[in-house]
Amino acid sequence: MLIAALVLSCCQSVAGATDAAGRDDLPRVKAAIIYNICKFVEWPPAGAGEFVIGVFGRNEDGPDLAILEGKQIHARAVRIVDVVNASDLVACHAAYVGEPGLAAEAWSFLDGLPVLTFGDRGASDAPAGMIELVHDSDRLRFDVHKAPAARTGLQFSSQLLKLARSVTDE
Image (cartoon, rainbow, N blue to C red; front, side, top):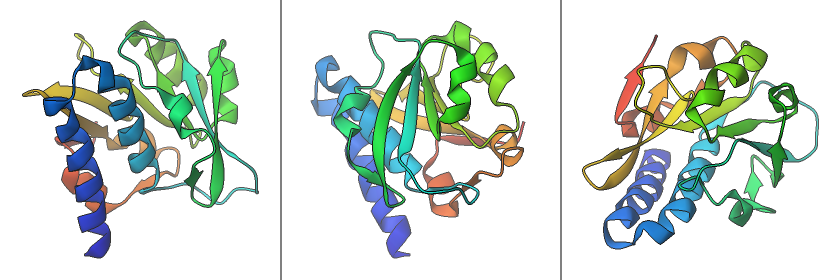
């Protein structure tokens, strides 16, 4: 129950920040949401090293992931890398796909691999990532697409799923 309260507190305070904060704070808010979500996802066992978050494609409303550099996720220091080729995403633990048009390319390399993908909800019905960041009533929320994660061995905490705006198994 304590974990659920912590997740709820983190995500609500971060999501609510978009109400009072301006558009200038949106990149930091998105980065904070990505950071907190990663803390409540379980990856298959892996060797030691850094927790790598890749950025594939940039957009003006993308997260300021540089603020996460050096923080800890699962007892690993966070390292942010810019990814030019989708094939390089396979070396990441998580990836933010900044351009909706790149999501299909990213997923073609990542299908079945334990890389948590994030993206901004676009105009199309195609998911932008396993976790989609969504503007909902002047708040920043997230949707979860469980099927691609299930194929990778990633496991979302039940507390995290309760906080999602929507959870789909497609």
